Length: 328
Image 1 (cartoon, one colour):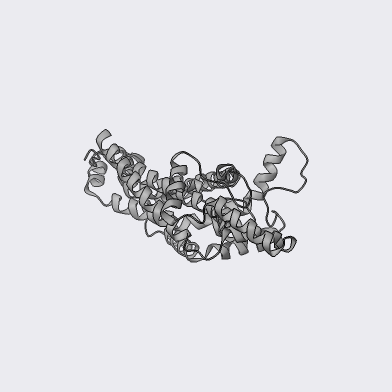
Image 2 (image 1 turned 90 degrees about the horizontal axis):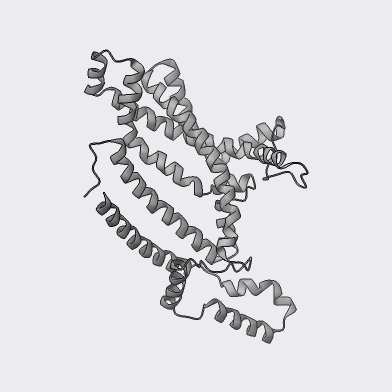
């Protein structure tokens, strides 16, 4: 096991550096000049000579005049040391800038993942056990419909129904402006604003996961060992949860771990529609403002999360299914 983990970590480091170079190269191909974009608001206040002098100083300060390999070396060296650079928009270290959007994304995703898993796993198991029943057919139709509708359409439907017509929840935002109250009341106010984006994220996750769990459980329930377990006189609950579900969990575990790792990633559509200041919206704002240090840092963070997720998935296979060995 230890040998396997070491080999995978070496592989992850290799992939990390390859992807870092590819991303750095691609970001430098994006049209636009970060130095000129930063000086644009001051253009009318400066003479042509002062503007040019400031522009050249800023390019030198940002290292934009160095060759691409030199810039990459400085950038990746800073990342290895924990220095992600400075935001050209906020004039603060990137780590400080991304803290709040990351907290907001984790806050909403923790609730969305817990709610989605709490619904999809029992629902998928029940549909597999009651396969071809009326309830199962209704769920299959609803999951196909939910899986097919684009996320922004669900956002619009939720806003129109629950915010405009019924008036139960606010249209957008993370909290009430100038809210006064206790910390607990402020938390409840934030949950009130969280309701609609949380509902959209949950609805968007139900279709695919429910069908995946149902398919895995259906296959498991038709295996010979299930017939043997029933022939032994075991209770149906024991057969389903101790025998069928554990074996069905192997193909499902990839999605489950992927969901848990996605707690750090933002949803651009949902965050933009509901004005939720999370990682997805923050990343697009960084690209729009040509704040490439922030955009690159977010991308590299996602790469690390993905690589760690793959490692955890591989190791989890051995824990779920004793037939799987990860010592090679």
